[in-house]
Amino acid sequence: MIRSESVDDLVERFYTVVKLPHDPFAKAFLNRCRSHTVKADGRFYKYFQSGSGPTVLLVHGLNTNLGSMVPIAEDLLDQGYRVVLFDVPPHGEALGSTGDPAEIRSLLRALYDRLPDLHAVICHSMGGLWALTAWQAGVNVRAVVSVSAPVAKRFLIEKFAEVNALDDDRVRELTGEIERRFGGTVWEEYSALRAVRDLDVPGLVIHGTADDYVPPTHAEQLHAGWRQSTVRLVEGAGHFDIVEAPGVRKIISAYLRSL
Image 1 (tube, rainbow, N blue to C red):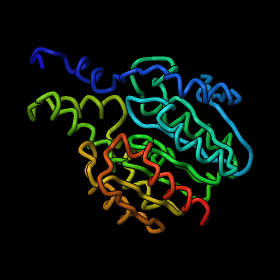
Image 2 (cartoon, rainbow, N blue to C red):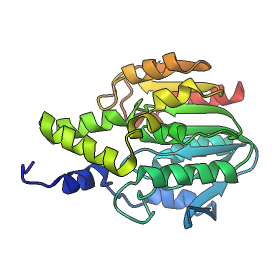
Image 3 (cartoon, helix red, strand yellow):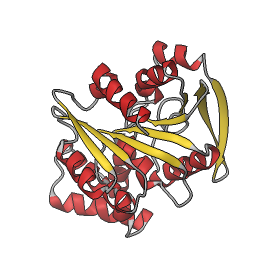
């Protein structure tokens, strides 16, 4: 890292998203879906829906796109569910290059309003943090399945500092500027651990024992703070391959059938 990098540039890099296009598998799946739009804070966003029956909203993680949730969506369609997927801005085909947490929260809340009587929300990685911290009174859903989610936005600062070899002074500059832009309560607002303490919805917390990006201890903390949750640690599963593991999809399916 270049020491002369301004704090504005540092924040920009922190929020910059790796934009990955939809692969052929995802495109083939979307070709079988109906496309819809939802309005949030004056902007229009696209989401995709397929199937009939109980509705399940799927939320992908950081630096990927809705395609990462297609294997789970395919299984759910085979079992008679309706699935809803979307690119979290600015991932995939969504506009922009930097992720605004307030924009993501606003979009998720608009989707919660648009999709009444949700059977479940299934989220992976940062998708879990986004989905849980966007929760508000009146969301009608029977359960949430959180896969490999970090417990707080603070964790991303730690990972970013580690990858970029930031010293303590630079970390303080980064966190201070984020607080200036998003408010001093930003860390509480984007804490999944804080969100689940007030969440009156059952949850299933899944995490791989071989996750070298978000340690399995995050699952244990989330479960401990979530009164109506159960936890399943999947032996040998990593952070990204877990959503494609047939065993994990079976765990999710069995859980949804039990609701």
